[in-house]
Length: 95
Image 1: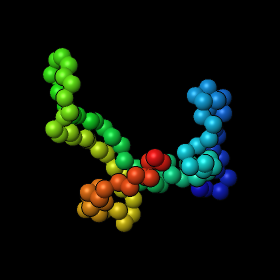
Image 2: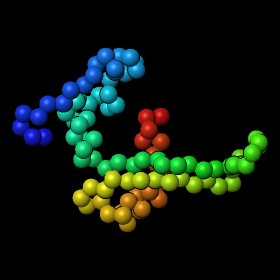
Image 3: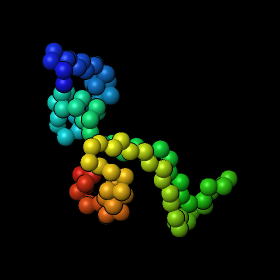
Image 4: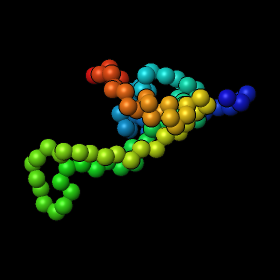
């Protein structure tokens, strides 16, 4: 971060939303660093199952998702695709 840079946090807003701590218990400086410089994955859309009018109670045979990624140096599209094709470890999401 630039020398003298200061990030402010709206503690009242965090209290209103019931946020007791940041994900991973990181400080504000690290949160800003990740926001600006870390790779990201955004789910832009998800589609599965019966999509016509009405309801169906069947398991979908297929699903699709539209994703958007912020790449960082040394993370190429082909490497990202290889990583996406690997199964996610159960502890990845804290379960």
